[in-house]
Each structure stands twice: as C-alpha cells, then as structure tokens.
Image (cartoon, rainbow, N blue to C red; front, side):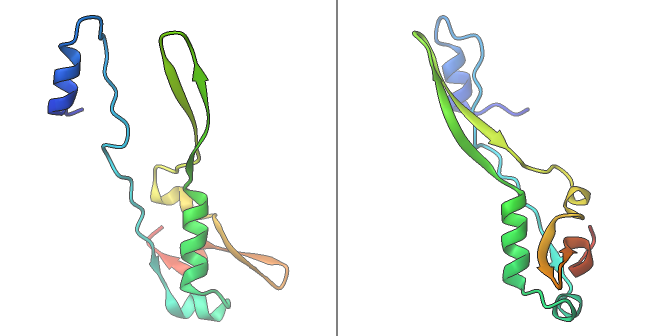
Length: 107
C-alpha cells in the first residue's frame, strides 16, 4: 500500500503507531448495459443505475466514543468483483426478477 505525505508526517508524531486514511481510493463499477435486452424486459438504464447503486452501499451506521478515541462504524455492502453483481435484481416484471446479467454484458 502506498503511503501519502500526510501519512508519513502523522507517523512521526510520538505515540502514533499506525495511520489509516479512509477514502483515498475510489471503487468504481462499470456496467455495459445491453439496450435491446433491457428494452425487451421493460428495464430502463435508470433502473440499472439504481440497482447497481443500491447493491454497492457503504454507509455510516454510528460511532463508538471512548476517552481516547472515536471510531465511525460503517456497514459495507460493497461487492469486490464484477461477477458478484450478476444476480443483482434490477427490476421485477410480471412477478419475476430481472437480474443484471440478463440486461448487461461482461459480468
């Protein structure tokens, strides 16, 4: 893991054993929707975008407060591989789920 200049400066402070910087890397998922397959199932590109966004959440759920440290708690539903997204439900049509791998390529 690469260290930043601010990371190295923080480690020089007496009593600091480890520095972890959150948010330094951005995760991105790229979905190549198949417009014909989506249209055939009555699914819009907005439906696809919403489903991927919903499936890939990382939100704060609270904090732990102590006398020397406060820690933010996060629940991460982030998927690490494109294959993990295959079975994400994009929409329900006629009582059946339409999954991402039915309307997108390369998953």
